[in-house]
Length: 582
Image (cartoon, rainbow, N blue to C red; front, side, top):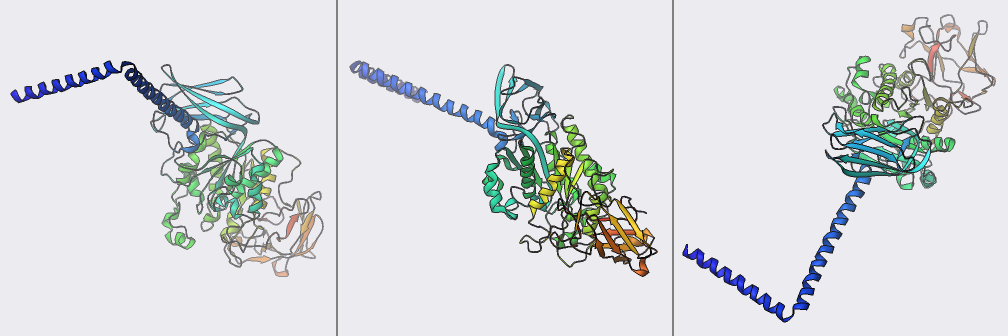
C-alpha cells in the first residue's frame, strides 16, 4: 500500500508541475498561445468535416452506380437489382417497365422519373432468399430519353436515395444460346468496320451476363461480365468469346436502323451447351427427357466439352431465371449444335422451352411482358464438309417442330433465320462457327419486322411451294411457288425422294432415299425428274437433308427478291404443307 501511495503522490506532483509550467507559458504569452490552440482546433474540425463529406459523397455515388458495377448486394442495404444500371434501356409502352431491388423489410420505397412527376411505391418484403426486396411497375413510357430515375427508401423517417442515370426507353431484346450466339463482333467478318461504326449508335445499349451455373433457380444474377454500356468501339469490340455477341449486335443495329428508337440488348449465352441446360425442369419432365449429357462422357470428350455445363437446367437457373423480373420485348436464340448427337427430343424441348420462357417472364413481370412475346431463332448452319451426319438436318427440322417453317401451329409468334447456306469452311474458329453473322442477323431482322412488329409488306421467308403437279408420262413432279415472289435456281441438286410408301422405311437414316435433280425451272416453278424404278411408290420428299448440303449461298432455290433460301424440309411429295405421315 505504501508503494502505491508513493507512486500516486509522485504522479499528482508531476501533473501539478506540468499544469504550473503550462500556466506560466500562458501567462507570459497568453494571446499568441490561445490563438495557436484555436487555430489547431479549427484545423482539426475542418479536416473532420471534409473527411465526413468525402465519405457521404462516396456512399451516394456508390448507391447510384452500384447496380452497374457490383454483382451482389448485402442484406438490408437499399439498392437496385444487379442488372439495373446507368445507361440502360427499359422497355417502352404499351408495356410497363418493372424495377426492383433490395431494402430493409418494412421500409417504403418510392420510385420516380425526373420529368413525369409520377411516384411508384412499394413496401419492402422478405424475398425467397431471405433478403428484403421491393418491386414497382412504371407507367408506360414512349421511346426516348435520357431520363434520371430516383429511388427513395424510407425507414421511420430516415431516407436513402439511389439513382439510375442516362436511362432510355425502347425495346429490350434478350439474346441467348451457345457458342454461335456468344461469338463476338471482333471474330466476325467485317469486324473492323462494324466496331469503328459502333459509336454512331449511342441509343443502342448493351449488357452481357457472365457465364455461370446453379443447381437451383437464382433470384438475381451472381455475376455480370459487361454492365450496361453505350454502344462504342470498346463496348462492342471486346475480346473473343467475351463481348459483344455478334448476332445480338448486328440484330440490334439493323433493328434500330428500321425502328429509329432505343434498343437494349441483353446477351446471356454459354458455349457448348445443350438445350436441356437452358430449360426448366418442368419442360424436361413434360418432354420425358431423362438423358443427361454428363452421363455420355465419351461424347463430351469427343466434342471437347468436358467441363462445360451439361446438367439439366443449370443455365436456366443461373442465366435466365434471374432476368424474369425485367420487362422485355422479345428474345432471339442461336443453339442446337450440341444436341445433334441426340436430336430426337428437340421437337418437344425447343417449343416447350419457348413457351416456358414466355410463361415465366409473363409471371415474373406481373403480366408486363407479353405472354406470347416474339421469339426468333437461327436454324443452325453446319460443320465439316464431306462428313455424313444426320443429326444436323434432324435438328434443323425439329427446330420448326417438324413443320419446316415458322410461325406454325406449334410455334406461334416465332420467326427464323435459315443459315444452312451460310457456311464457312475456312473459319479459324472451326467450320461450326461461320463468320457470316451479319447475314444471319439481317435474315433474323426480316422475321422480327414481320412477326414482332407486324410489318405486312416484309417478306421474311424463303420460297415455299403452293402446289404440286405430277406428270405420270414424263415421271416428273413440278413444284409451283407464288408467282409474285419469283425464284432463282442456283443448283440442280438438294432434293431426294423415298422409294417406299411405308414411313418406317423412310426415316432419316433409310437407304431408300434417292436424289432427284431439277431438270427445268421457271421464275415460279421447278421440275424434278424421278427414276423409272422409283415412280409408283414415291410418297415422301426431303430437301437439304445433309450436314453440309451446299456451299456458301449456293443451295438450289432462292427468292429472287430477298435472296432468302428455301428452308430444309421433310414431307409429303403431293401435299407440301402436310406433316408426315402422308
